[in-house]
Image (cartoon, rainbow, N blue to C red):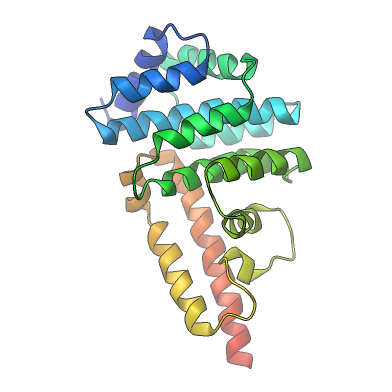
Length: 239
């Protein structure tokens, strides 16, 4: 059994065995069940967070398109034996009377340890990937993602950097993608770029517990950062 199959087996087993009627209760159970294995807890928690929050985002947007379904499948390759459990969790989250803010707060609490906020950005990246699958990020989706980022305790400039990276816009601000003011020196640009590229390395993401399929999204992140840096670098060379 490969690692990805093993993780989904654990996710599926956890979902099938829980008697919780709401995902908010399931999150508390997850914290207890995997208390002795933080690495496994991160992997299972990431998968559950993505499923539950994507369901809530679909409810906020009012429609689930085939493009969004395909985008979700690009993030997760769910073994056939576990599809039923994943669908159960998705439907449970979508139908739960608890608002998405409750879900986001519960998910954030699972990644409260030092250095784990990067996982929350991975979750936002995954949600953006699904949201923009139909060619644009709709206003209600932006509102959902912005509020989720606030609950994750991201500063506004941090969220704007993520938004700039994902917004389907032919004219993008390279400084905003790097999270910098246009007055930043080139030394600041280079330093910020190197730090962001380092945190986006596939090995770093795998260590944080994201599934192998997510690396494609990480590649998009790196491409956006490279493009932004190259644009600024060319402007400085011309200057």
